[in-house]
Image (tube, rainbow, N blue to C red; front, side, top):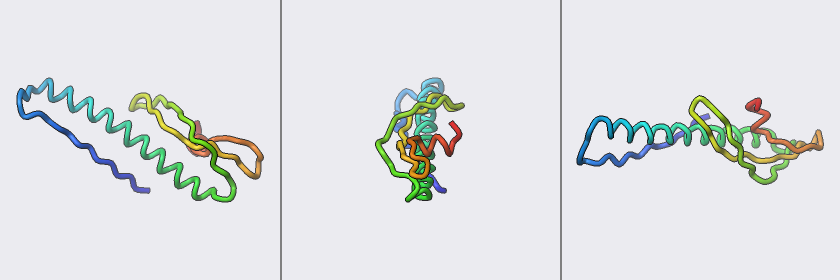
Length: 98
């Protein structure tokens, strides 16, 4: 699996003080890390849903929050119906063990 994400920075040319630059970069990098984590979760789910085609049927997307080392991550995952078990669940949650 390959995930690609880009971080664009608009660093002001004036008043480049190291403290302000450090705060700016820390804030942008924190948001970027969370965005990458969310994208990785989406890719995992897409791959696992493809592998489970015919055994599960997708329903609506449902939001979830995870407390991680990167902080609070919000993402959406599909509710699925497991055809062989006749029950509903979240394939991504099952794969991740949460």
